[in-house]
Length: 111
Length: 117
Image (cartoon, rainbow over the protein chains, first blue to last red):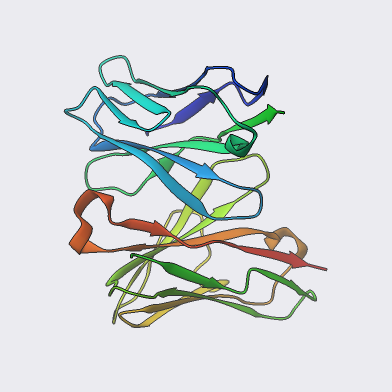
């Protein structure tokens, strides 16, 4: 059974810092991996999607990497801003199945 | 494009009553929609897959008679929590699949906070 974990559970940084969020999954047989952002009491916004054949994806200040063989992904946020404060969810899609989500990392960027 | 509207965003109901949550795809047709439940500081857990015109597929451990799902049209799926109890209080999120967008085609609603008192 696929399981997804995220470290750290919570993170608080001053504005301007670069930071890394970690995601691990137990079964390397995945179709793709996706990072989402969730604001308090809100739904999910897709940030980056990495196909199983890809190593990384970039969007603006965000960079996500994927090492499928080791079951790891990282989300790198450059020059963090208070508006980046949210919960970041990592989710993998096993073949033929729906998303399996991690518990999330709650990020606070302090002005 | 690819907007999913979920309503209501918050609802408080009394124990024993039923609550209906709607999930609509506004600018695309969704033959498949998904319902998730999120506990505080926990992962989203898939509850069921809603298929237009057919019965929903429930995940193991999800009570079909408590969580009624209806997907009567290509743009609307509803989740009804029947005879709600305080332990049903949670955050419920729907997702709709837009097949035109390939792997990027999963759009999530804004969620519904259900509180049963």
